[in-house]
Image (cartoon, rainbow, N blue to C red; front, side):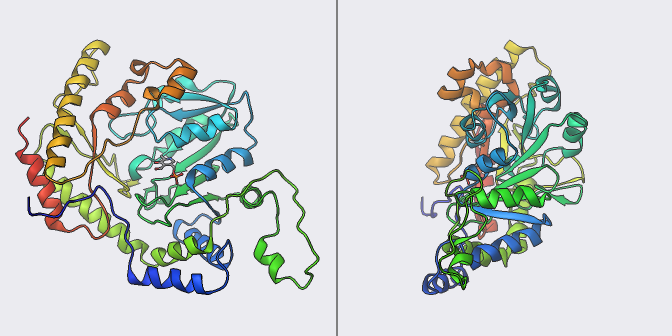
Length: 399
Ligand SMILES: Cc1ncc(COP(=O)(O)O)c(C=O)c1O
C-alpha cells in the first residue's frame, strides 16, 4: 500500500494555536485565569448558553453537575445503555442508582418508549446523551418529564455544533457538559465545559471545581489585600482547567464555524458516496429540527432490518451482522484505514453488568448498536480524496 494511513480522527492544531499556547506559557500565569475566562465567554457566545464553567474533563463536569443538582444515594438517574461509560460512572460515583434505558439504533439516542417505562417516583434526573453529534429529541423528552420534577442533564460530550429546534444542544436541559477530548471537534487535550441557563447552578459548579471557594486564585493573587484567604463554603475538589488548555480552546473557537462546516462537508461526501450501499445504514437526521454536528460519522452494518423480528430472530440477525461488521473493519484496517465501533453498550461491561445483573437482550437497541456500528474516519483537514478512498473500499467489500 503506498497511501498514508487514514486515522479515525486527528486533532486540528494550527500554527496560530501553537503561538497562542506559547504566549500563555510565557505569560507567567498558566493555571486557571484570564484564558479560562475568555474561553468560557467564547463558548457561551457560540452556544448561546449564558453561564459556562470550564473544567478538567466532561467526566469531572458530569460529576459536578450531579453534585450541583444535589443528586444523592438512593436517587435514580436514567442513563442510556449505549454511551461512553463515563455517563454511567458519574452517576454511580455519586452513589445514585443507574437505571439503564434502551436506545434507538436508528439515532443512537434514548428510545422514548423505553424511557417512558424507566421513569419512576424515585427518578431524579435523566442523562440525555446527544450521541455522535445528533441531538436527542428534547421536545419529546421534556414532555415525558413535565410536572415531575425530574432534572435533565445533557451529556453533550459529542454535542458541539449540534442543534435542536434552533437551539445549540446544552441549552434545553437544566445543565449540560461538553468534552474537549481530542476526538471532539474542539480540543484542549483534555477538558470539559459545564453550562446552564441557571446562573446559580454554574456559580456552584465554579466553586466546587475549586475546593468550594467562590474566589478564584487569580482574584486573590491580584487583590490589594494579600492577607485575605478565601472561604470554602461548599465541598469541592480540583477540577480546574489550566490557562494553557484554555488558550488552545480560544484559538480553536476562533475558527469554530470553519471546523464544523468542514466536518459537515466530509459527512456529506460520505453520505453521497455510500447511499447506494444497501447493507450500510448511514447516520440519520430525522427532520429539519435537527442539525448534526458530526462529532463522529457512525453507520450500522445492516443487511436486513431487525426491528420487526421476534427477539431471538433479531439476536441471530445481529450476530450475523456483527461478523460482517468485524470483517469490514479488518479489511479496512488492512488497507490502512482506521475505524472503531461507535461506542459500547454498558450492559456488556463487567462492572455494571455484575452490579445491576444486566442482560444485553433487555437492551436490544444498544446490543445492536454495540455489535453492528462502525465509525468512519472524520477530522478537520481530511481531504475529499481520503473520503473517496474509504468509500471506494467499502463499496468494493464483498458482502
Ligand atoms: C457520551 C460521552 N460522555 C462522556 C464522555 C467523557 O468525556 P471526557 O473524556 O472529556 O471525560 C465521552 C467521551 O468521549 C462521551 O463520548
